[in-house]
Every structure is written in structure tokens, then in C-alpha cells.
Length: 211
Length: 211
DNA sequence: TAACAAAATGAACAAACGTACATTCATTGT
DNA sequence: ACAATGAATGTACGTTTGTTCATTTTGTTA
Image (cartoon, rainbow over all chains, first blue to last red; front, side, top):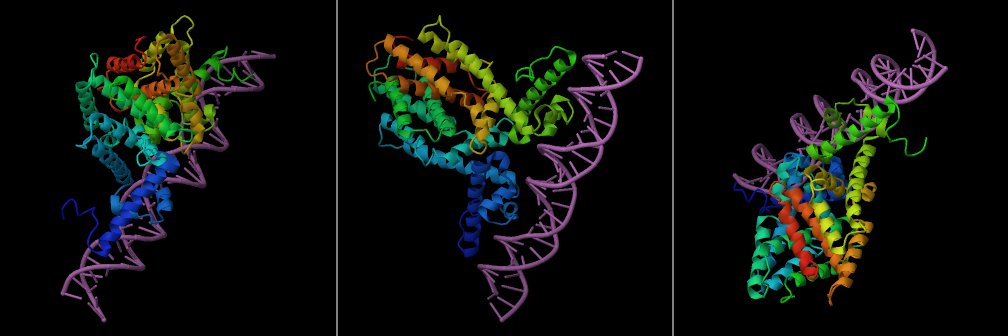
């Protein structure tokens, strides 16, 4: 059995059903973290949310910790897929790619209460549980490189004598991150359009020729 | 007994010793959250770190949850004290007040591995444990108002025809927040001076006449 | 110094935890 | 149709959890 087929939908009813339950467990675990916090994401809570049996977690993930890791991996893949699609779009200008990343970052697909709560949950334990690290760093090296690349393109295109692409990229990344935090702490009052305007306001300040 | 003397250092050896143990428990609990994560911050862990007896937590804080809340309150008070001292300094210009807040925000007093891990730990559970909310929002309404005030002052002083104080303030706050996240996730690679330069780079872009 | 009051202790407890595993059920291949 | 295979179940188990409280220790007061 190769490494893909293990978790892919199989070709018969049995394998399809199994992978469906696996997916179900991932969703239930995510929901449990959101509803009850990391501490409250117990086997019993996941069981109640999923409606599946107690032993299912051990069957699919061996341990609860593996299930939690799979939740983090799932979230991480989902975000990477979203931003990289925009960041590497060949037909978009540098400015449009930056705009696109801002839009993705603030879209409900990415920025929603449940997912953000899960990001924060895993991040909070990254010091004590290093195995989470590879999944929870939404702004990892590849994201960083993509933003620096965009900033460099903008610097070349426009007239920014004092421009520094790395400083600008680091600032933008921090800005995006901070918006997530604001959303997490004040999701009821958070205004996506206002947040987008604030991001574009900074982009315009950094790159007045482009925005 | 008034509300202050309960937790203040008393005047005899007994009260002094008691408040010392209380402080000791707060530190040990904070350390436990940092070392073992929120989930691992158990009575046993706190006991081991503090060296005090098991029953001490219940004596001083009634429940473990109260102790954790007191840790959050302690952290919150410490940060508020730091930033408000700079933000409301009467002899500083608006630009210097902003610079000062950036400096405080990136200083080891505030931005250190332990404290940031604790911020993130409490924040991660704010959805499921609303009682944490009042302590974990470092960028609360009063902080927000202070930054908006500074931005308004800068707008009045300089020539920024398209300026928007609220947008600028929201962006700056998110920027500061994002730097904390970056530090939390990459404390080994984090460069405080670089982060400060990035913040000032944005400040200069937003308020070129001032920075 | 003796009597008192408060602080500190740690053993004992019930509840909740994650995991293992014998059992049951459904699907497959012949 | 019928073994055979593997998924699904849920009870049972040992551990760990937070809290209680009777006891001991320490400091205060008369």
C-alpha cells in the first residue's frame, strides 16, 4: 500500500466509508477545539460532536494527539493552497497579487471563528509541543519569500528611492497577522472591509505609485 | 478588611509570608503554562515548579481556574502599566509617543518568550472561556483610543491630505500585534531591532513628515 | 510561656482522562 | 451462499485530574 491510498478515498464502499469517517473525525475535533478549547477537546467531546464511537479515534489516528496534529495539518494545507494560488498567479501584476493575498487573508474561507481559534490553539502550545511547529506557521518561509518577491517587483516597477523590500514584507506580514488576532479577539465587531481598507492604506503608503 | 489589604503585603511576618507565597504561585503557574502549555499547567506541574504544597493553590485562589485568571490579570496589568506610561507622557511629542510605544512593545520586559506564550495561551481559549476576555485583550479600547489620538495629533501637525487616523491606528495596532506573533513563533530568529525598523518604516510611510 | 489563630501540608476522594481490546457488524471475494 | 477480512463498537482499565479536609506547623497575642 503506498502512502497516498492510505488516506485517499478508496474504490469500494468500505474504503469510501472509512475515509468519510476520518474526515468526520477531523471536523469534529476541529469543532471541539473551537467550542471547548484545547483543554476541552477530549475524546468524550469529540465523540459527542461526531456521533461516532469512542474507539474510532484510535482506529483512524492511533492516538488523540495524532488526530490533533492531523487537524493542524489540514488547516495548514488549506491556507497554503489558498494563498499560493493567488501569489503565484502568472497573469497578475505584483500589485494585484498583493491585493489578492489581502483578500484571501480576510475572506471567510480563511478568516472564520473556528479556523482562527484553531490556529491560536496550536500556536499557543508551540513552545511546549514542538511537533506542532511545522503546521501552525501560516507565515512560513515560503509565504515570506512570496511577499518579499512581490515587494521587490513593486520596488523595481515604481519609484521608491528609500524602499526596502524585506522591511516592507516583514511589516505587511505582521500587519496581516495582526488582523487575524483582531478578528480572533473581536470577531463580533470585526469589519472585513474596514480591515481590507486598513491593509490597502498601508500598501498605498508603502507603494504610492501602485495603490 | 478592605479589598486592598487582602493581597497587599501585610505588616507582620505572617502576612508577608502569605503574600510571598501567593506571588510564588503566580510565577510558578506562569512558568507551567510556558513550559507545559495550557493543558499541561496542572496542579502537579505548578506544585513541582513552585516547590510549595498541593493544597496551597486552593488556600490562596480557591480553585486552579482562579489562579490562572490571576496570572492573566497580572500580565494584563503589567502591559497596561508599561504602554500607558509612555502613551500619556505629557512632555513627549506625538511622534515620540508612538516611537515609545513601539520600543515598549518590543522590549524584553514585554516581549519575552514566557509572557508571549501566556498571552497566546489565554487568547486561544477566549472563545470557549469568555471570562478570560477582559484580561487578554492587550489592544483593548483604551489602547486603541491612545493610538488613534496619537495618529490624529500627527495628522494635524503634518500635511497628510489623504490621511485617515482611524485606519492608520488600526493598521499600526495590527502591525504591533503581528510582531508579537512573529516573535512567538520564531523567537530564536527574531531580531528586535529589525522589527523596530520595520515598524518605523511603516510609521515613516504613513507620516513621512514626522519619521 | 501558654493559649490561640491562621497558614501550610499532603493523604484521600470522586470524577474524568486516553487507550486497549474483545466483541459485533458490514463488506468483500470466491 | 459463505468464509474471510477489516471496520466499528463500547466496556474495562490504569492514570491523572482538581478539590476537600483533618492534621501539623508557624506566628501572634495576652
